[in-house]
Image 1 (cartoon, helix red, strand yellow):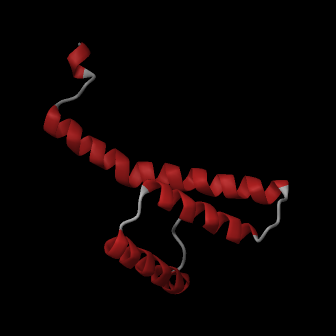
Image 2 (cartoon, helix red, strand yellow):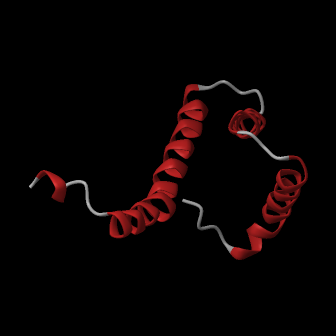
Image 3 (cartoon, helix red, strand yellow):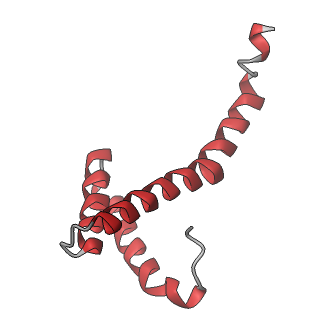
Length: 92
């Protein structure tokens, strides 16, 4: 989960700020974001290709996906459902 101690966030947040500046200055496509995330994982594994480390990397991606859906996508979908009507009530 992304809930790390505040003391560990500062250097990582500096990297995020650099990325945000790059995005604002030049734009970043979906493919470029995919490239960046892939490179980060490759760097994190340090060239080690053990089964345990590769499974750990996959688990991290799964956790990120799940948490992003839970905290960002689902509330957005709830807002849209309220604004536009529930698709499930249309079948009743």
